[in-house]
Length: 65
Image: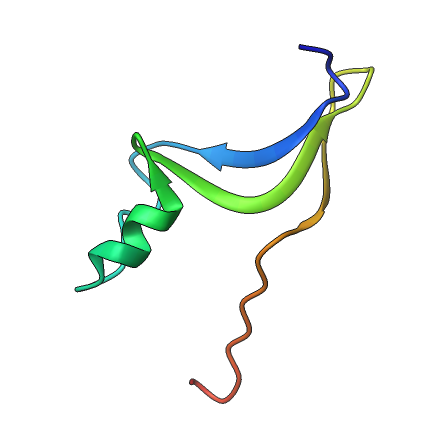
């Protein structure tokens, strides 16, 4: 795979989001095999830096709602 190919940023670890409270469907949409799919578009540059190019899914929390 070339280093400049774009994809979704996925993260995994003990300090990562474990799921939505009482919403297994939403949790299944964002957690795949223990990996959190952030919906951030990323790619590695030719000099091996991770670059965030944008976001596919937008979430806005306004006024606590």
